[in-house]
Amino acid sequence: MTESPDGGVHVAEAGAGGDPVLLLHGIGGSAESFAAQIPALAGRYRVLAWDAPGYGRSADLAGPPGIEGYAEIAARVLRGRGAAPAHVVGVSWGGVIAARLAADHPGLVRSLVLASSSRGSGRDPGRAAAMRSRAEELARLGPAAFAARRAPRLVSPKAPAELVERVRTVMAAAIRLPGYAHAAASMAEADLTPVLGRVAAPALVIAGTEDEVTGPEESEAIASAIPGARLALVPAAGHAVNQERPGPFNSLLKEFLP
Image: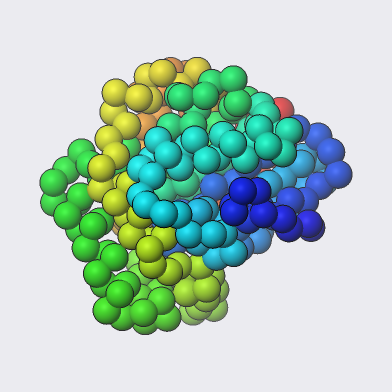
């Protein structure tokens, strides 16, 4: 695997050839969140996984870009690396960015996978306020304690302790201010309801049956809003479905991606 910065955005790349696949992590993750997907896809595809701006090894942004801004940055990464059009896989917050990327830049997205995603917290004032409050919580607790508090919610109730610890470790190493605050603000403002109908790429929507963060119902709504989208549910999986159930998740990717 090679790692390099693109205009301040750190991108891990693996695979010798094939169509490019861009992996966009959730609000508490990094490229490391896809540790089980990168090697599984690298034999057939050119895999790129970013640390979102303000996360992990990527540089901080001067101000909050909003979901549209994150999508524009992802578009620049694809163009800058000669990796367009790409299959784009977004998990949670990364799925909101991916959907916006597909709607705003249809020529850059060959296909779209949205896992544990949502239409944005801007659809509900209470959810928007809760999302904005996360930055204050992170500032008060620090990354380690913040991650320890949130990680158990991202997996199913019967998930093994080692999985919770892995999710916690990735989160604690990835998040910081102001990057996390910018991400939370983008979610608090986002409502993709009028946007999803513009997605023209073939789309697969994945949800864990035990996701208590966004929930399977939200994935069902997303799949209904995207023309021709397919919905797949992964049993015994929480919000971090790609980390908790990598076998079934990877099988769905390989079945869907051409």
